[in-house]
Length: 160
View 1 (cartoon, one colour):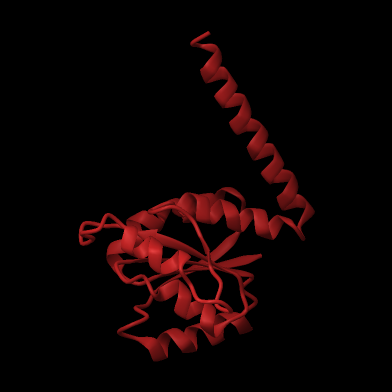
View 2 (cartoon, rainbow, N blue to C red; view 1 turned 30 degrees about the horizontal axis):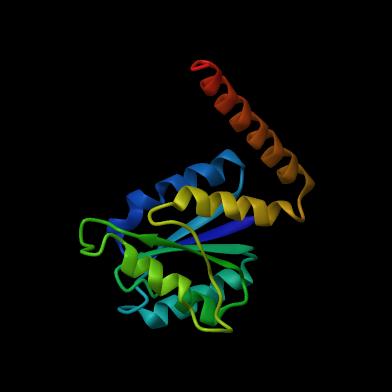
């Protein structure tokens, strides 16, 4: 199992860090790229072809402002793409512009989209998708969910 993570700018690295932590937690290999869909479209296209040949199973793409990166990637591959709308210090609209550009994709170019700056959920969704065909990963995911549930119950019991 292998995931490719794309971000459009080095300034988005911090937001995507949680995605890498979740993938590591579940022992999922990943490779990261910083490629602007607008400034380097030829390099993006070539990289997508390359990762398809390398056996990547899924793509997580984070982008802010116009946030075209996940959609452009989806238009060039049939690999599942999970989009992470990013709001960093440059965003005047609080990431809503990036969110809308991802959830309003035209028919035939789908991307799954998580909440603004929520690369954690993007990686967890990737784990869910990959666990469909991997029994060990599915077992790890179920154990993860049980631990999270127990932790929440313990926190609630402190207040009862």
